[in-house]
Image (cartoon, rainbow, N blue to C red; front, side):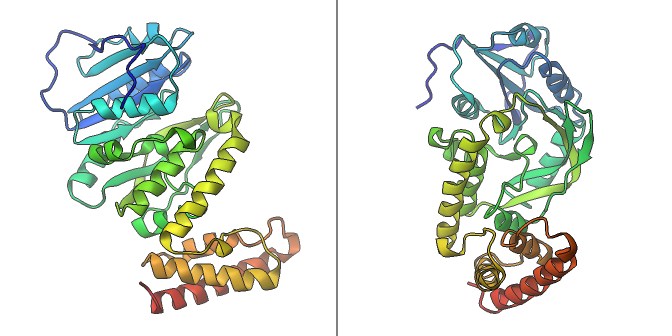
Length: 327
């Protein structure tokens, strides 16, 4: 049940008639986002695709966030203001429960979208290629101003495989069937790593993922992000979730990827590559190499060419065995 205590009544940004049934609901949770939220909203109002509603919940901000939200007067914007800070998980789940769209798109209040973001993802999902899709993206370091291009993997198999060691999708770039987000709400026990935990729950339920080969959002990096402020707590939640994912795939915790001495990683690493290729067909060799790299120590210096050769050989061997014995 969604706790609505402390929430003011939802309001539309203008009296202009809203579409009866928008195809897309965009979810934007905001807390003390006065520096960035205007750009985030503007990037959505500039979309080439227009059949969407944007639900913004200001989660008890103490800065000018609410004032800035109220400066926008577009009928597609639904504004909800909370008198108390209820937290990101509760806020995102509340938005999902209100969504009228067939699809739910995520965008954080400190990020911004390219003009064709919604159009590209709607076309992909409407064609039935996946149940959820993210995209390549830019990363903007708010301190240095440096902009980097992401290096995503794009197929369902590669994304599922990489979930065993990381979160291979950019959360604010994700769009998926709204019913999935309603069936799998964010869980409070996974605070600080709730995104990763959500994706593994959805993956274990058999839904299909993809990342589009197009940069559709800019993701900001700054010191006030939860992932920066709560790194150790997030790491602890991640490790527990990682184990849950591996066992859910049928892989023993003995093969959890971690740095090991040479002989041990040859045994456990190769076995892990074999097992994950058995349980997830069509993983690319490049991703198998990424997975095996987690068994190797970093900073090899002069030995780097040898560790890369080892990575290639073991990955090819494990992949071949996995494909021969796939489930």
